[in-house]
Image (cartoon, rainbow, N blue to C red; front, side):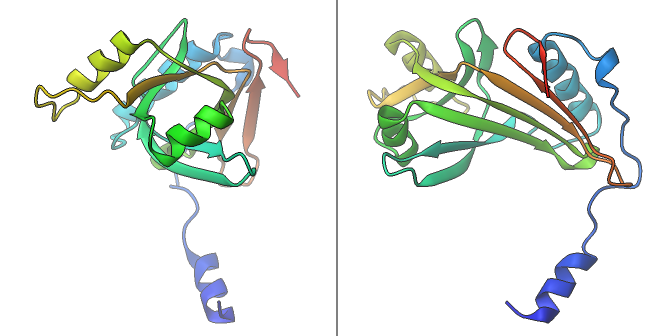
Length: 178
């Protein structure tokens, strides 16, 4: 684009004036507990769709793609989301069953990244998810699939107006990673 556009982009605000502080030393050791705490704080701050995230996948040819989805659940199977097996993401997950989820809460200057292998959950769980959608009409969808990311890494990121952002990386067992 033009130099004018580049300069325009530089004038846009990065973060709100008041951002929460984050001290990893006082955070819950378990990543899911920290995520739920941050999700509650995002709700309290008025974030719209705080359960929405960007899901990144790759094709067999290693072409990345991402799109917005909503988190369905977190349990022993992993972090749940759903899509049609015939969609681009469904086809990519069939070939390369790896993904990264990125939650972003702008008003708080926070991001959470979760990455790891992806598994398909049962046909029964998938059918139940389809039936429980807000616009469910009683129909069935045999292509609807509930998936779960089984995290091998987590990253909690807190923005700061002074550029001293906090990056807290954890393994699946809660051990801190560089």
